[in-house]
Length: 150
Image 1: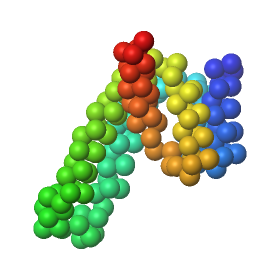
Image 2: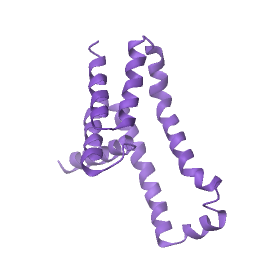
Image 3: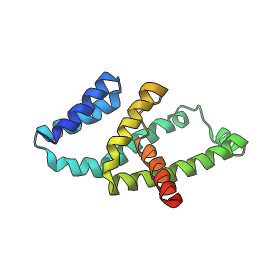
């Protein structure tokens, strides 16, 4: 039961702050633990990020399927200043996400701080809770800068 308490607290915080994704995620993991389905936890841990990224990528690609983005408009937009900055942003984002994923694997003790930060960002800044891995990546870069300067 003691390992379920943090998940229960996170679930309640998700419900109270109307962070449905956090509440659902913590609720599902809590139920897996309570139903003695711990053997599924490594699968969720290993493949959960991939599944989430798959769903996110699919949602971003829908404008191609609906015809809102065509091959011609795609090619034209890539060579605009905003398009080139978007390419740079995509490169930076993928790098930060790789650093974040490494950080949560190698230093899982940062996860509570990242979750609190994401919740505060949603609550006070009107953010959306899709960025824990990016938040971990920014954390990894900030920690590296702190270590480098000190």
